[in-house]
Image (cartoon, rainbow, N blue to C red; front, side, top):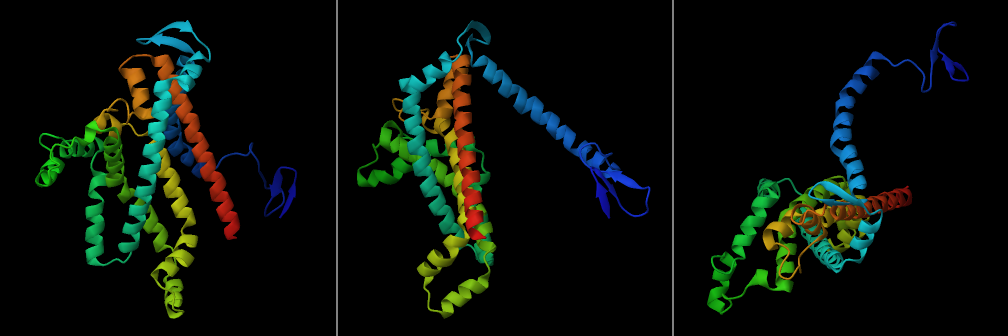
Length: 313
């Protein structure tokens, strides 16, 4: 085989195949492009065009879908200095950290406990997945009813202890706790699935050798499971973080952002700006700021992934 420039000759002289970006595509490659093209078109129509429109609208004052005045970067300045948005940022941070730590902990505990493929473990896995497969709207409505002061199960259970008059959703701290509980209750199964897949990739011979050497469960978890699960844990961590930063349904349905905006997250703030107050210019500016924050999280994920992969080589 000889090659000169961008032309490679294979087999008999005189038959040369062009390589590089200008070469003729094979029929299989055209068919592959045919399969991908509709998805690319859908991505352009439903993602790229709305994103560009959002950037355009964020530069204007938009009242009820009507562009009234050009503001430039003023909408972004207002969002970065608004007390309401800063309060929503604090609430989002508290909610994200609390939900992230508890969801990852519960998901890891479930994955470790249900790793063996016994009939009992398979049945428990199916039960654990029920909250995740239920729509977020339905699950949040169910928990709102449970936490209700008048007819909720929580109030009925606490009644014999003299705590039946407790109003969980009316107290800022308790309402944030209920919001975090909603996230943990639903998304622990998602963390379990990702972490269970990582556990299945660890060779069982390592644990058997550690048992022979006298290593206990904690030592095996610390010395074998955690080092070999760094990538699955990292992927689960970032996926959950992005989900919790952007989620709307939990706060909208369960607490409504109350009391006194104590549980109003950035997603709920965007919803209210755009679809309640119809300040679409500022809502788009806030959405783009959150989008940039998501890109930062993705970049951190990629950097950490590459560092861990490089360290493992």
